[in-house]
Image 1 (cartoon, rainbow, N blue to C red):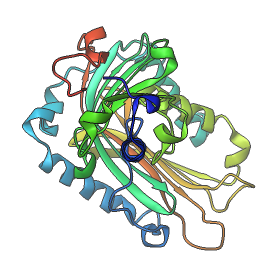
Image 2: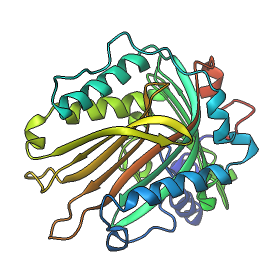
Image 3: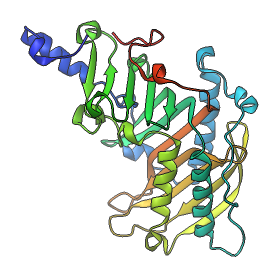
Length: 317
């Protein structure tokens, strides 16, 4: 069933359809249970414990359908890139940049993957949190997302395939009126699709995250006074390397205070990223965004069916 405003004969139905569409997200649900920026404000070091606690909580709450984090230890990872890992003799920022480039080299060899994607983003002064089941294919770039949490958006699905559907994403809402609205076709960069999101569905995925980090790290003038720490860590019960970059003050409009990137040492891909930003006026940095990937399965052989809204395993009307 296609959504068309001109096909709705009654004004109240058109209003209901538009309101329901506003809850759709490009792979990220509308804010639910958000906190104010003031409440989210905390020093970067103190939030590390909370992030680890969130990761443990997420693992404990996972359903059988979405596979437990413990299964990660039995997952075959991607073939690592041919580049040699960064060596001594470089600045810490160069070493961090080298890790990201090596990770991108690894991901260039990955055809597809599935997993669980969680995010927190500061939107309109509130932290919006969401957990999605994810499928990603690199050629053509394709994304399938199904919302697991928050409960108000659970069951929403969205599909985007580069070069198809006139460049639009296909999605459906849930709840009252969803059967009347049916599936909708939305511009990924449009107001409705981006509502409740810092980025579009075209920015989703591990490779896009790494490219973003490389682009950022290449602007070395922004990090003249920054400190970089690279150390061993653990995430989702897997050995990792953590890179932490801290800036003592804003640089013009560049307000990044702290960024943490956690790279799985076996898979050579980032599994967690979090960023804190300086507020406009002399407050402590606050969390602006965090993205985590769990239960990753690489090169599982995804096909066009996995990115087809008519897939009988999906709930598209």
